[in-house]
Image (cartoon, rainbow, N blue to C red; front, side, top):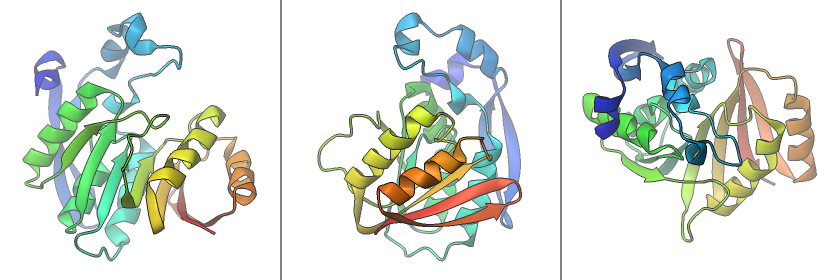
Length: 208
């Protein structure tokens, strides 16, 4: 839990889908960004988006609480950030792994799981290089599509780690390049249903 000692944070309560949960939330995400080293920033210009609870995560959470989860399903909370959605899925009896590229996010995810009395594993993960043997029945991802360059890598990752009949549920705040994502889904022969949770787009994907 080293990150919780390094980053000042507050305890926030959330009401999602009739459920209440609490999260440790960093007080100053901008300070986390300005403290990043050049190595952490990297060629891919990774930003510490994990330190904020974005509207896409809250919209996805509403959708997650509406699912009739089968206990024991293997679920990945990809780019988990503060692990809101992983915690909700774990509450429903699934086996959750919360994954993020930022180690500090994993510290917060672990602390938040403990705070809400759920069991959840954490994993340091780069979706461009998934480890062999990784397999999940469902992948949850909030605001992963914020840049066009992420679209294909995310779909490649999903194609690698999803079971044959697996599904992925992604959310986005309605960015201008969503039409390009829909076109890519059609080209790559993904089946999907798109719905709205308030202003948030929800994509429920499966392989054709």
